[in-house]
Amino acid sequence: MSTSLFLQQIESFIADNRLLDKSAPVVVGISGGADSVALLQVLTRLGFSCIACHCNFNLRGDESLRDRNFTSETARAFGVPFDEISFDTRRYAREKRLSIEMACRQLRYEWFEEKRQAYGAQAIAVAHHRDDSVETLLLNLVRGTGIAGLVSMRPRNGFVVRPFLSVSRQEIEDYLSEQNLSYVVDHTNLESIYVRNKIRLEVLPLLRRINPSADRSIYTTMQNLREVERVYRESIERQQHEILEHEAGQVRIPIDRLRALPSPRAFLFELFSPYGFVPEQIDEILAACDGESGRVFLAPGHRVVKDRESLIWVQEADEPSPGIVAIIESPKECGELLDGHLSYRCLDGEGYTLPQGKSYACFDLDRLTFPLILRRWQQGDRFRPFGMRGSRKLSDYFSDHKYSLVDKANALLLCSGNTILWILGERVADGFRVTPETERVIEFNYKK
Image (cartoon, rainbow, N blue to C red; front, side, top):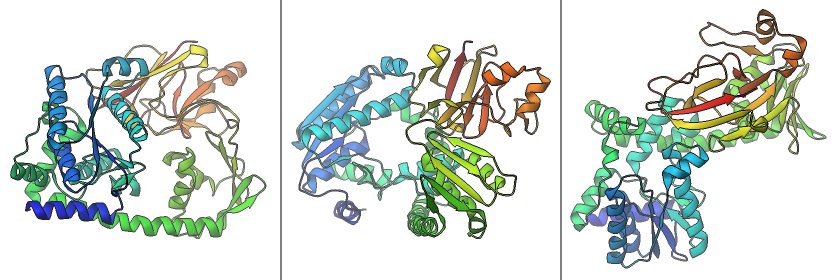
């Protein structure tokens, strides 16, 4: 692709997606790599007022200092203001009990947003390109995803914009070569340690041997799916308007109308998932429509009850649903619960050693769906203990293990939706265990 065609494609993409205009400056994240150097140069060349912002995470010794010096010189050469910050990333990760990768992401975007506000910038431009979007789609497929995950990266996410999503990594490097622009290489991107790197270095080259245009084909499919998603969202919104009955602080969903929909599960998923209900719960709610009345499903501040001919959804925004003791909103919020009796932390999976004893429970973080809920048990709860086939009633488990009435009343369950992950101080559930392929671990320690 020629230089003029490359610039024209970027300019058209920005205009078509209404990402930027010339009315206010743009914060541009620059690491020193090929993508971010090209982004800064292209946006400047297209007439946007840019501020180059660099994060030094101090993770790669001399390379971190090299990147800092290079980005400063690059900004000076392009004639744009340069701002920087230096993080003690390892310390931050320890204090917040985050993986290094999660700590970097959190630090980066929080600081970028501070700079956007300080400079009165219209947006934060980052250099994700078409290959990144394709890698994200494949990563989502490996981990399991819905239609939103198939759409992958969007041109805009709040104040974060991605002007390079329509071009490939190779086209960016060709542009830099034509412009005689240098950049630095992060050698960790060349190591097959993380799943994304494995997809980049091993999976995509294999797909390209099958189809040399695999990247472009996948990206075109994502664009098509984005259009499909618009139609899908509009249909779901119309169905909600036609079916939901609002009554004095609660929402009623007639089961006969729900069954008549083309996809009752999709309807319930889109209705409830924004409020913390997880996919496993959606399946259970749908199955409960054919069962007896009285089944209850809990999420933070919300409760769904199976009535005789309806599902009743009660929103309790100001207080937790009955039975909920505590909520872990996201893996960023590692710390302590139950006055310090329950602690949890997020760790890198590489080299992780499983602790011994019933007071510990460890799970593959990427297999869990947040928020996690700590609650009391209720009638109808089922549990799949580690090492067993199928699930069993929790009441039967209590009887087999000779729980007294007091023991049952005091029993606490860690749940992802209605899926029980752990009876605190006892058995953990199957299906979420840590394996050699686990990238991120969440470790719990319960002290009675």
